[in-house]
Image (cartoon, rainbow, N blue to C red; front, side, top):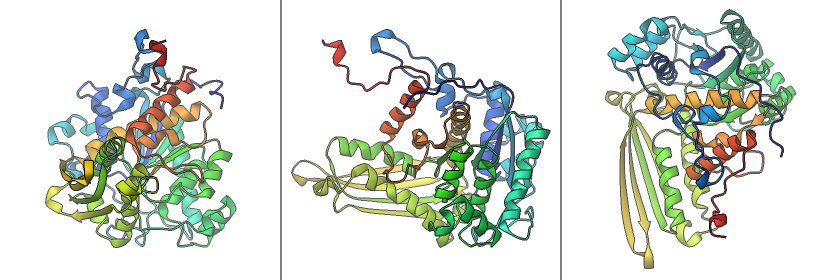
Length: 437
């Protein structure tokens, strides 16, 4: 595959639209503005702090990624979004309680100017929430057209030259792929008939993609992971990616599990439980929404450890995941893991992990990286599923028939090699034999 012939420069403003203006999106917006003002550092963002090695180790070329590829500048980002509550971004951020009042006060005026558009919402898909700021229409197709109108109004009123949508909303109830998801035509007919397999997040995806806007899915919902939207993405020349931001417990799994496999250490079981008290935790109290999240979190070990190839080591592993809503904890999620491994001659060992993390603090830089990389991909003429962005997701999207790559270190190599490929640099395999010839 040839590298892009030309990457269009990032001229003008880049609009960022987030369905959902809760803890994650307002932490992202607040953080970007604090960084722009020189009041904070973008810790956790690969686009802002990461470097990339070019050529041989002896060449000493390791520029910042943002100096190597033509990314959009933070000063050019403009924010907007939808939410079922009428709170502006400052009020929403204060209610979420992620950032301390001192930090929020520094960006109060900025955040107060970001007001949510009316959201497309259906209580049947997120049973633990309800709000007053909701669009009305006779069917889902008309609701999707209203989202398209919002996108165009945002483009005109904010005078942005490019837009990226990133789903930062809640986890919807579990939806299986159906025939109505198979083609764009069947999808439109299903929207017009209010088919129950068309979830609200899919309406945002359809509206964005058919408006020529890249879409990232930060939740485990199907959303863009269906043939109809993927075909539209190709037809409209739009890059898409997902799904489910990889932040806390699953991030640790994709770091630890590759190490066990590399050392050929066996795994009897991995028990994971979480407590969290934010809106995400409240939504996941509903069994339907939890089923969607569980499917995403459980798939990781199966793909990394490949028990079909290593039945002696992983063929009988027990993997359990629990999530408990505990309001006193707020956004500061705690994840416990009990890992039963075995080594030489089958002797057992245990590892305990207690990760007291801040969910939105880990997710915010992911949103930043995704919107900048999707914008880059769009300007490079890349379209459809962007598997090179798997690094950021619990349940990465792939081409039909391909299994997803979950190993964080392989994902990181894939991401950086894609950037090298885009810029016409030699890919790095880490073979290193040339140093000893």
